[in-house]
Image 1: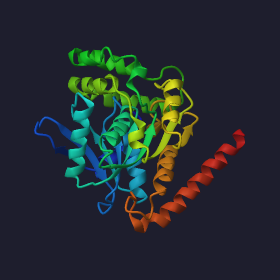
Image 2 (image 1 turned 120 degrees about the horizontal axis):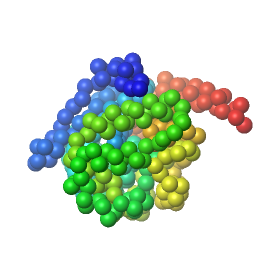
Image 3 (image 1 turned 90 degrees about the vertical axis):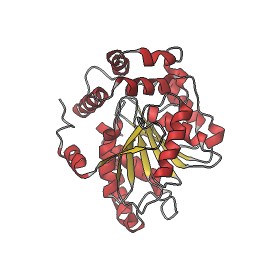
Image 4 (image 1 turned 180 degrees about the vertical axis):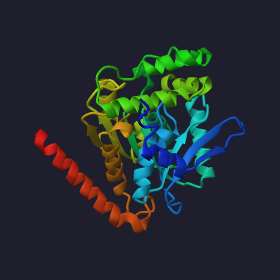
Amino acid sequence: MEEIKVSPDYNWFRSTVPLKRIIVDDDDSKVWSLYDAGPKSVRCPIIFLPPVSGTAEVFFQQVLALTGWGYRVISLQYPVYWDLLEFCDGFRKLLDHLQLDKVHLFGASLGGFLAQKFAEYTHKSPRVHSLVLCNSFSDTSIFNQTWTANSFWLMPAFLLKKIVLGNFARGPMDPKMADGIDFMVDRLESLNQSELASRLTLNCQNSYVEPHKIKDVAVTIIDVFDQSALSLEAKEEMYKLYPNARRAHLKTGGNFPYLCRSAEVNLYIQIHLRQFHGTRFAAISPDMINAEELEVHASRAASLQQELPDR
């Protein structure tokens, strides 16, 4: 239990990367919490958006690995927003505050949906250069909860947590996946009633992505072949929506592959970001590119070698 919380990597992350709190709205109760790591000279970083149950800490393995290779990485946690327009406006103000003109977004589940909606919201004056969508969706109707979306704010915290936990995998699984679920349960416990109710509202209120507005955004879709909260139909819908997207499939990983299959997820993120090297939209420090390229090639060779016996 709590293997991740006591791991050297997590403790190193907590002791070396400061948590910042930023207010950009008139309402000073709306506080963005974020970790901003890596070279500040990079003006187009990759920003990580968590799922309903997640906090900014859930991407600590991506922060550590990618900053080690020279990338600038921001992992954040949203304030309480009750509708998508309010979220998008708040996120735009946050980017303005951080003086970031364009960014790459990695979104997990709800985070991926919000990333797509933000790209759509800013399509006339684009702020999103690319998207990495992990176990994400494009239409909230897949959850069959649109009729309850407006009543989450009334529910007590224990009931909201029960709703979220209902989507977590059960039964036998490998130790890393079990550790990932334990860590996410711990993160879920740290959220208060309004944080959880607002996220579930955003997750379930009737909305869908309009792909024609973000057709020029480079997309990579990361999903898993084993059990996750997403139906096969939801995955197929994403493929249809983004026919030109790169697809990265993991044999296993469940709902939280960025925790339990971090090496593979980090590799797919690197491959996605590599297409922007040498442009002003690079998320990496220019003097780190050669070293990082070598690292990617070595990792790919090693992962291919591991897969050979399965064929």
